[in-house]
Structure formats: C-alpha cells, structure tokens
Amino acid sequence: MHSNTVTTVVLPEGITFTKVFDDMMRNHGIMIAGAFDFLRDKVFRIGHMGENCSEEKLYITLKALNKVFKQNSIALKGDLHKIFVQCYDK
Image (cartoon, rainbow, N blue to C red; front, side):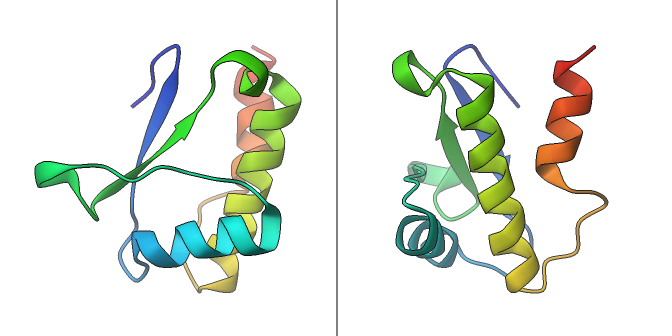
C-alpha cells in the first residue's frame, strides 16, 4: 500500500518489526516506523516526505531493506531497489 507520504509494508513471516527496525538503524542509519493497534507487529512504514522524498533516498532505503531481508533469510522474488527503479522509470 502507498500514499504520497508513506508506504506501508507487510512484515514477511520469519522476521519481527524489532529485528527489521534494529538492523535498519544499526547497520544502515535508516529509521522506519511501526504501526499501532491491530497492525502492530504486522506492518512497518517508510516515510517519504520533505527531505526524504527523493528517488535516491527511497532507492537507498529499499536497497538496505533488501539486504536486511536477505541477511535474515527472507525470500524475495526480486531485489526491492531494482524493482523500484523499473516501476519509477515507467
């Protein structure tokens, strides 16, 4: 799901929000947000407003997320940052 200001990502099975959050902050210096109420620990959010609203910063965020998922044995159908570029260029 996406909007003009935030993208919500469903957490894949096999990884927790805490693990994704910690790896993104510690290893990549990127902060993501969790969710509240019934979505808590089911999704996380990537903000893209203001200074974070650029193709380059979204690419960097998705590349880091791709690495975190792969390092934690989360199977992906493709590289997130490469798929973003393909969709962005359309």
